[in-house]
Image (cartoon, rainbow, N blue to C red; front, side):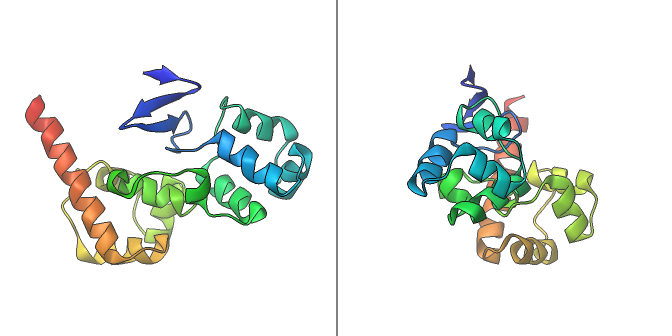
Length: 163
């Protein structure tokens, strides 16, 4: 269902940009706690004040690389601004929380965005080598990559069975 500029998915708000869990209200609270104006944050992040306003009001959400930059400016983590319960994280979430677009991560992993998309959608079996590469790139343990990969794969298989 569409709601406040996003879609509700598994109880986590999905921004139109695809950054699940992004919270404009959290962004504003962190910005306010540092006594920064929207203009201050915009200048530090390299965006317009209107962009920051759109983020805070839920009309838009930053891309993963921009959200990473904003988190650094605010001295918080990306998950502080886009909280997703660990049991609900997808491989796409781990990528985004690490500050990568699908294209950027695919390039860094030496694979095509199409292949990474198939992995993230549970259409590829677990591959230990790729899992290690993803864990290194995303800054997480390989065991987390394996758990989430297998959950994404099981979710995909459940969806296929329902058809």
